[in-house]
Amino acid sequence: MKKIAIFASGNGSNFQAMVESVKNGTLPVEIGLLVCDRPDAYAIKRANREGVPTYHFSPKDFSGKREYETRLLAILQEFGIEFIVLAGYMRLIGSTLLEAYEGKIVNIHPSLLPAFPGKDAIGQALAAGVDCTGVTVHFVDAGMDTGKVIAQQAIDILPGDTSETLQEKIQMVEHVLYPAVVKKLLSEKKETIQ
Ligand code: GRF
Image (cartoon, rainbow, N blue to C red; front, side, top):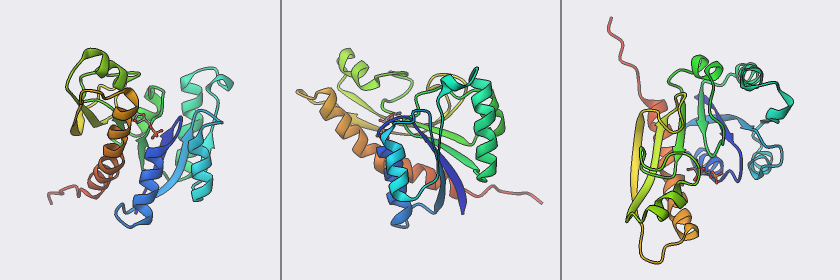
């Protein structure tokens, strides 16, 4: 079974959805580590409750991204992590991790990329007055929500929707879509030509 790390910065509801999918047998992976850049994040409490090892750090304790990612890489290797799932991790991934895990880092974003990248994608969609937004799972590159799209699901914005109601609808979709996409990615067999 592939060993994955989940990176989160906040609530961790997508982390929880992955854990539940592993527990109910629909996601055949081992969640080997939760990485968190905010020592007080609720995601850490969830991991502790679920018996998932955690590594948390404060970027301000390091002189820069290269330094904390070098440390992170050592930890990921120590835990035998083969694949990285970003779930509400609020930092750009730098070259240290991108090179070590090329094509093996994915992210989920609450819009239909390339529309509304970056922070507050839900607020951006509401402010733009569009009648449809959604969820995107994509590979991670050096940009902000710019990597190759893997899967998308549209969600209608109805009259009367607020950022709270829309976030609720988006997260319901995320919690089903993300474990399913991770499962598919990790079970795809590479064809070998002899
Ligand atoms: C999700 O909506 C995800 O799309 C975005 O950050 C949010 C994280 O939520 N990248 P949670 O911490 O998993 O509850």
